[in-house]
Image (cartoon, rainbow, N blue to C red; front, side, top):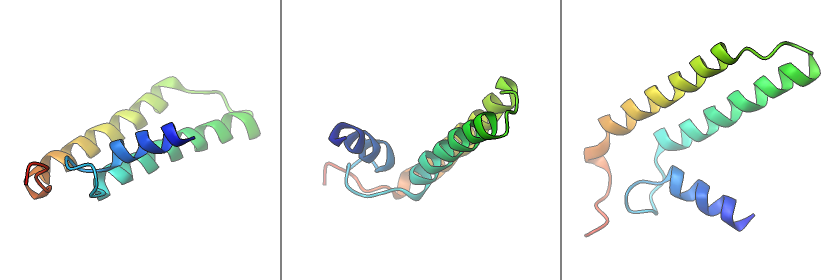
Length: 81
């Protein structure tokens, strides 16, 4: 469990490893929601899994998150200071 929390912290913080980034946290939450809701739809509602729509959703999350991270790169704290 500690390993998962460590990975989530590294994925959701800025370059200094301590400051949480709203864009990165949003990407993690959006990705988790996409997987949960798709799984719920397939299991509970017996819907067919559509890999093209799932892939498009993941691509949109990654593209939007990457653009957001790139746009606010200059605002991140510098770990060397």
